[in-house]
Image (cartoon, rainbow, N blue to C red; front, side, top):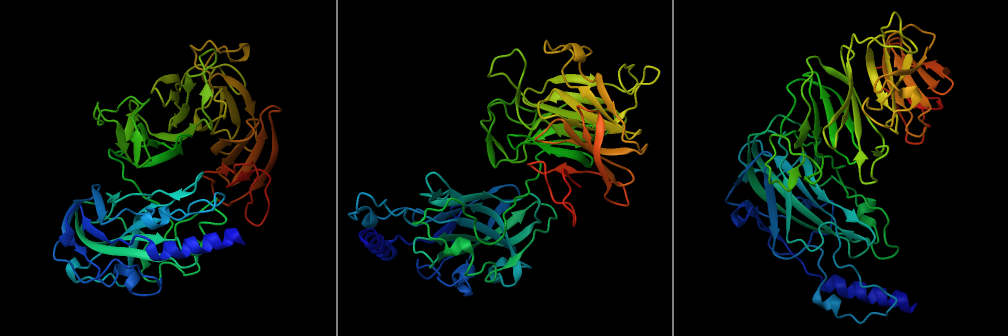
Length: 496
């Protein structure tokens, strides 16, 4: 009971003594912010005041280029502990309440004409940034900030916008406090994207778990920021010149793309990322310490024909016979004509190439030649890869570079050598092949007539198959644990 009393008294004192604040300027310009009458929060999520805090129009409009940054400054620090709370004499077993720990978000709404006369009514708002929770210990990313900075998406259209800053105080359980302000900006440049939009109010329910959460007891182990699921579409700083046919996410959350223009490129997906460990691409300054999201880290020399298939190792693998710190991350691409290339996407090195027209030996060859591959998939250990194509079979190849000392007797020809050929019993074009992420002995393949096959690599046989669609199955994937629901049935291994 003593613990409960300490918490109750501390919470009440904190509620009354907590530092209130307002957002006062955009990129240093206070005349572009619709200033609230005072720094008190809005307490009703259904009130029209939750949109812009009932503030009148501002006199200025700040110009911001699409892809540029916007900073919404405050007259205080967000999530900061107050002097009053710091002085509370707490029982040793009771931790200090975490101040106005709270999430924050930035929204945009495009004005139909002059933003100074636009009140933001209707389903016009979309989120461009959010600051969620961190854990161990529990806190929020906006802790102790005195400004919120975000990137204006390059893809949105040019024009005048209301920008809305929101911070939701959660220090009184079940009684969220909305600190909001709106400013006026003019976006130059940009594209033609049309993001999903919400109305404010109406964008979140009072019963949303992100608003009703008790951040003191028990301490949350998970937290989702209320309202729109935030997904920021970052535009590539140097895009491909043709359609992207295949992409893959690396274990470090960077993005590899293979295009019909014959280029393979690696982009960073983080808002900012250290350049450490990555050779700089031609459009990255040599002294850059961080990269913006969408920056192209590297480009491999263009292939004369389009890349149509791309696969990465599920986990980084250490090169055989090398130091533990020598980590090799492999990516495999295949062209529309059947040329297969293996690269290390960390160093940029081309580890192996198998060209069409090369004489080959091994399972599935005829007269010294083998059919070109259409789709390829690396095994998680990076030592083998599977391919499929015109015959509808699945072939297992060595992914060990020809110059590697790690070649075994069964892989003595090096990269691309054929280790096994597994017929499916249907001579129909193989559209897609994929290794199981939990068991390299299992491979899934789909074909032009809508059939899906699960193959046992070790036994070189088809384990199971089914007709999934009446048309070609262009892609498929495995669940993380190798089991997944498929339509109304529980199919044992693969998802189409």
